[in-house]
Length: 195
Ligand SMILES: Cc1cc2nc3c(=O)[nH]c(=O)nc-3n(C[C@H](O)[C@H](O)[C@H](O)COP(=O)(O)O)c2cc1C
Image: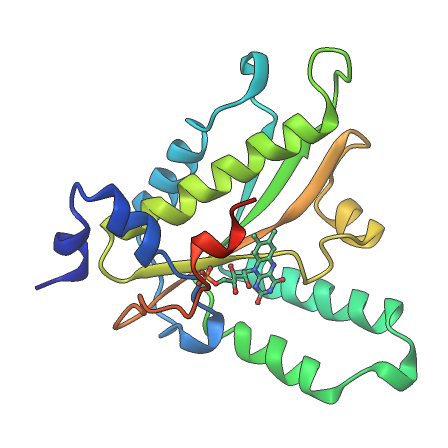
């Protein structure tokens, strides 16, 4: 049976079968734009304090992804001491160019510290990202993961994305197409984390 059928209306399976999938696993095919729209639409339904909608999303596709990966590599070279730089980074990001379908830059707006605290805004945006992750379950071949690498915390990436001072980059949701989704995980038991 198709995975998306197994998941249908089963919230426990949707949560527990959710996996991060990485560009090395992507086929390179481009996802339908309607899938990306569904993800962003569902992110918008995340809980958020005082309904202040602290998220902003910037969708990258096609040549924009190639330019963004070039920028991420440039930042890596600027910000990593030369003796720690790895040649494999260049190869990896070049490979990504042939694999990624869409990238959603995840931005948190921190504009009114009185109305809602910074941590609350970040939490709300993170809830939105989980909504995107879970929404992928309805699509048989669409996968992705949240990356806080690729220049997320760099001022160079901040200005590359034309973000304002009160807009905080929280990473990238990186999407692609896959033949078969993974569902397994070797997570520890939840009972080990009860206080
Ligand atoms: C805030 C956050 C940042 C993450 N950043 C990265 C990242 O930079 N690179 C990466 O490979 N995975 C990243 N991940 C994905 C985690 O590695 C992944 O969720 C974890 O390995 C568990 O796998 P699962 O999502 O399949 O359950 C991130 C996840 C979160 C929540």
